[in-house]
Image (cartoon, rainbow, N blue to C red):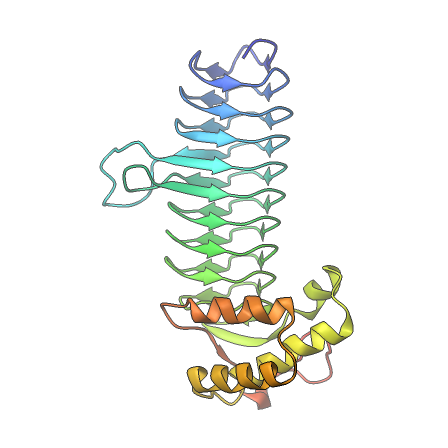
Length: 278
């Protein structure tokens, strides 16, 4: 902790481990056992609880709470953790809670952006590059894949998975898994492919078209998902195999345990928008 820039009005336990260039603002509390990596800034009136590890170059804004006890009636005070990677931004009022069972952890990757009043509950896994907009909520044990976008006031139920590059629209609520690359809206409803996100990731037109075709085959018309999956897999194998995106999509579907959001009826899909169309 020697050399860290700690405001004299902050309360930092001597048993916390802070890299030499960490910045701690006024009225912030950092408990014993916290570990904070180089270049990280913890601004005013934040609270970092025991069992929390922060990597490099994170920014923790005012009023953020990291690693406090889970909001779980089953929590009995056992030592649990929050592990956070590098270059994440936690805006005002964000809360991230530690795991529930002894030895469990909540895990956040790198390069994520948590806007004001976002919440990550106990035992969640948030992969790299995820964005939670204002008021977005993750229930316990939720999993969010790389570069997914959870819009404002969207809610992810406990034990629900959101696939990589998926997008949840504002006020959306999901209690079933959202497959990778898909857009979810309303309640447990798919409305197309996140074409904008895929373009921004550098995918070419052919690979995006392959994802869109798979979406139509798997979800449109409410087919039996197991049969549709087997049929599409066989077609792709006959055609020479899958793109990396389709392989990830099939892996996600094969590992599902709680069901998947279903597609919006064709008649209700907004016409004329290439970005939103299936």
